[in-house]
Image (cartoon, rainbow, N blue to C red; front, side):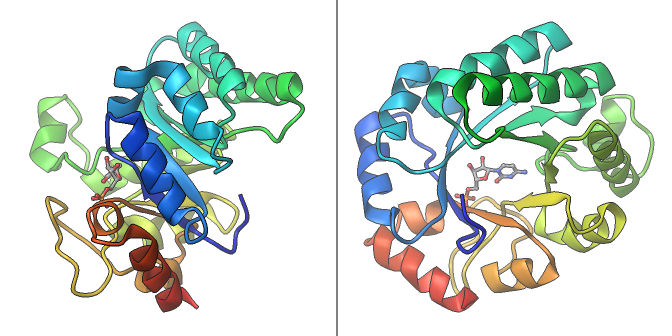
Length: 236
Ligand code: C5P
């Protein structure tokens, strides 16, 4: 995927044909598409392969979190489905994260293509300080995000998913080469839906985001291609 189009369109659907149609309508206006747990659970790797035939870079957002051997095997199993980026939970720990990176290198050897980027999930943005305490973590939420980003970086992960309001903190803390993948993006005047803290695409990019994950503002619009094009225009 090239850096000049940072938009990743989230196709949050279980339906292969709907995902295909959406991909066809936004293919010239976005840099990649994101498939998540619901799509994968409904359609498996065969479904992802069907989308891969559309020749768009695929971000496979399955948020792996298991023992190192299992996560590594799962990542090796993606060799047949050609994804350019995938996610793991950083709270899976050092051994799991290192196993994930090693497995991504094996994928590259096997496919002869670039290594898929391994991106860490820190604290889910659906969790607040109270939720964190309930899981036994008593540090400040932002300190915890920073600590997990440090762990990800020290294990050679390529970057982390973060909320728009963590971009500045993490960009400053982790440097320029650490990729920040940012959901919670809303074009001006677009509905926030269930996202609590949103930011415009232009502002998130100016704060240092590398990729903008945008779903419903594009996929639920009357003309997804035109909407994505209009978003691109605000980034020029
Ligand atoms: O429709 P919307 O633009 O809100 O979609 C955002 C996408 O990013 C969804 O696929 C959602 O699951 C994902 N996501 C998120 N917040 C996170 C991580 C992922 O919204 N912290």
